Amino acid sequence: QKEVEQNSGPLSVPEGAIASLNCTYSDRGSQSFFWYRQYSGKSPELIMSIYSNGDKEDGRFTAQLNKASQYVSLLIRDSQPSDSATYLCAVIQYGNKLVFGAGTILRVKS
Amino acid sequence: DAEITQSPRHKITETGRQVTLACHQTWNHNNMFWYRQDLGHGLRLIHYSYGVQDTNKGEVSDGYSVSRSNTEDLPLTLESAASSQTSVYFCASSDPGTGVTEAFFGQGTRLTVV
Image 1 (spheres, each protein chain N blue to C red):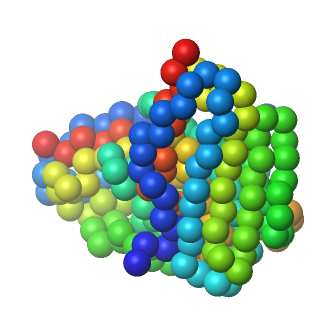
Image 2 (image 1 turned 60 degrees about the horizontal axis):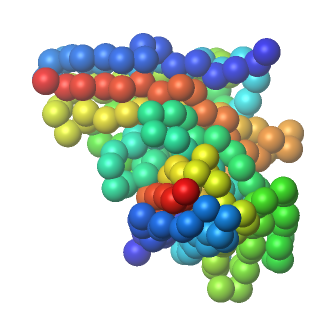
């Protein structure tokens, strides 16, 4: 079992729709959770961090965390073509090891 | 501005050669990480360090080594380069001890082993 799992996609959504990205993790001791966006040929950049159960909103982005289910999600509202990228879920496991999922490719069609 | 830089940005080397990729950060972060990124695998952890003289193996550490002699640098060495090590390599740093839990990434190094 991979430590952090994501559906590789591609996930295709029309412009203006809500994109929903999901991630599960295996280490119950994990404390910090992140979503990074990566454009082709570029470095990952942080878009959201979440540390406690529930929802966290920042502009068009909402991160959701459910530690009991070991599940993290990212919602992107009013999706734009510029949101087309690979989205990486990352988890800090017990002991401060930062582990990434394989990423989900998002395509927003105009 | 504080930053994290990798060098070189591109490297072509021959099978069997030793190669060292540099990573330098000016944030004074304690944690530093090396990842490789291949299509379909996301970022896979090679080695990481929590401070000077501390190094730890990640999930894909075979054929790689690191050393941490100061806070700013974590060079990654490929002892004997193999074609399977052709990849894009990313270095990152963070410092949860000071509240910087998120990782900041360098620009990446594209390594080709021929």
